Image (cartoon, rainbow, N blue to C red; front, side):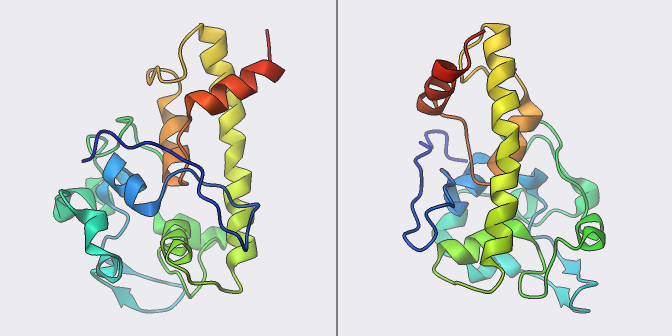
Length: 188
């Protein structure tokens, strides 16, 4: 896994309201999804089985990663050791399908949509997925409040590792700049 990944806001001219600061490659290289995201699945949405879905994406996204341990593990073999913040977050594909969060074009869910969007695909699902991303940003405020209240630094990873890991799965990692800007408006 890459250790010196520097988050930087990604700008999409056609969707300025969508501002992740981690590319799909950076998310994967950081350590995410317990190594299970692109596992073999059978989608109840499409009625099809999928295997090796990760192969549609650029090979360099997976350089240095053990595919079996860091990308295609079975859900039952979820490993917190893979995750950057060493915690388990997220839930099963079946749960996502029951909630209606999965659509036919992206049977693996949001991160698959993000990978494809990042590579240039635009679709009728973009507005919904960007809205879901923007809703997930709700974890940022409580994370920064917990850091402030603990008197810690923005990169003290012992503070709210679950929120941090969740945000990473959604293409965001807290930066010093974001934290300082938040602090200006949120003094104790």
